[in-house]
Image (cartoon, rainbow, N blue to C red):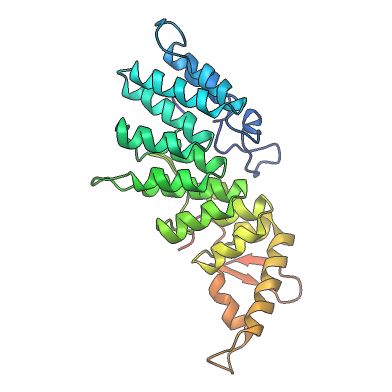
Length: 287
């Protein structure tokens, strides 16, 4: 795709060796923050070239060393010394990646850093979702205003949180901000692909608690989920049958199969083997 580097985007999806897996870039596999973010953003902003403000790498290093007060001082100094909205947005991304809610609020309210609604490789909300910083994601999304809809941003952060296993972020996006579990994560001028469907991403990554939450809030199985993840799908379907039979039924005559068919779109499950068959295998998106 034009404008994209050869390396997979740091915080998003790539098609792995198996052809259907969703995987983050290896450089992002850290516990305490965005490993390569400081250097990437430092290079973009020129580092110490001005001789006046600290580089993005300095700020990242302070965060990595858990020197929070120094990181905040450096970040505020860099913000005061910059007139570039892009650089201020990069500072917001760094603080979001490290879960620094206080600094995120400072940049949003005191420095009036604007949050774009289109998901990008270093979008603050997407970075925060990647690392599971629920409070930061909420603060960032609450700052959005204006006529532009953040739906693509919500869809992207939801699918990413599903893939990363951050249940609290998923709950926040669906219950508080209205993200639709049935919507694909797409960016402008992109087509939907199955690996960016929240339920697919959750099941493929082994995050069955998230998959159950999605199913309870509007997600549906589709043929591709059943075909690509037959064993996890079988476990989830069995769990649903058990849960449904334990609940009081308003229609005693209705069978479990009929009740559970509402969780399937365009797909049928054979009772003994849970083998999927699709009436329309060409359609990627549920109707």
